[in-house]
Image 1 (cartoon, rainbow, N blue to C red):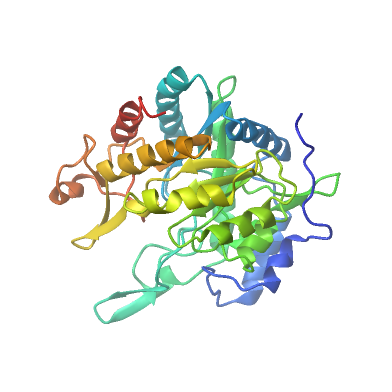
Image 2 (cartoon, one colour):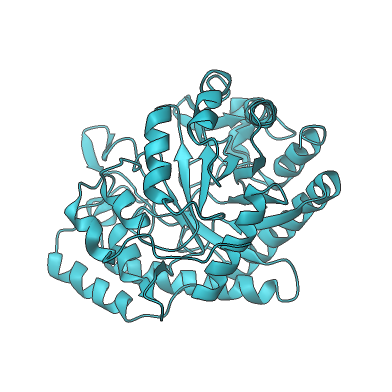
Length: 395
């Protein structure tokens, strides 16, 4: 029997996060301009309907129970100059091509969740970027500032939230229209820019709050502080949410996060996304599994973020390390009595050359052919499909 969706915190409000320390948020120079944008967004249309968010939770409950498989993927970060219709169509075809062999191999329906319609903000390891003698704020995604290396471009601008909302509404509508009568593709993004998330929170007739900026939101590895602002926001919304589990996450800290974010133990509410890296997964993953044993959570693997390196000034990822982490995750999960629920990939349907191997570029010099990402390296469509083929005996 499915448990009813209940509001986790009595008296919770979307602005509660403001009482807690916040990491990875920009500093806006004009507080009045920021407040005006927040008011406009608070009166704007939701990006996704609340009913669709609830439907995704039921599908993720099936993932937790081993009856479905979660395939989450898409761009590292969306850009304002993306051609929405073409991008949605190409990504939908890639999802279908990847889902077919997974369903044939596992007998489980594939739940498709795209990094789309809101993935505009990026956490950064450094708050500034220096080129020669010039130091400017780091690029944090199109919703915050621009990629161009100039003072005006890099200054955080709250008006960018309006453009991100307009584009997200259009992308979500295009996704829904493109998948009419077919398997739905849900939207997801990291819940990073809290003024935007707060402004798009909506309350239903039963008093529950929902983040209508997307169907599925996740807590990043840099913003999962138990007493931090991002946890304070996500604990109060009724959406299904994810937690990125990186190498710095201790088992007791994970247990505390699970208790905080899913106190009612609601199947489909919480997805734990492993991103340890090929070198650390064997040593660290079993203890994380043990920390959440007995809880109704989904476990999936993100083999991208723990396997990022910098060579000759450029970020890259290696296909063999990506494949190794996925295989290790599935083997260790089964050995520990855990359901391996799915995969989270940064991928593009385009013929980009950002990850080495797997039928893509063979050497660092080959990356230049089509290195187009605004932030992190993505698998191209052929590499993503090959990954599923190479995992045939693992899934």
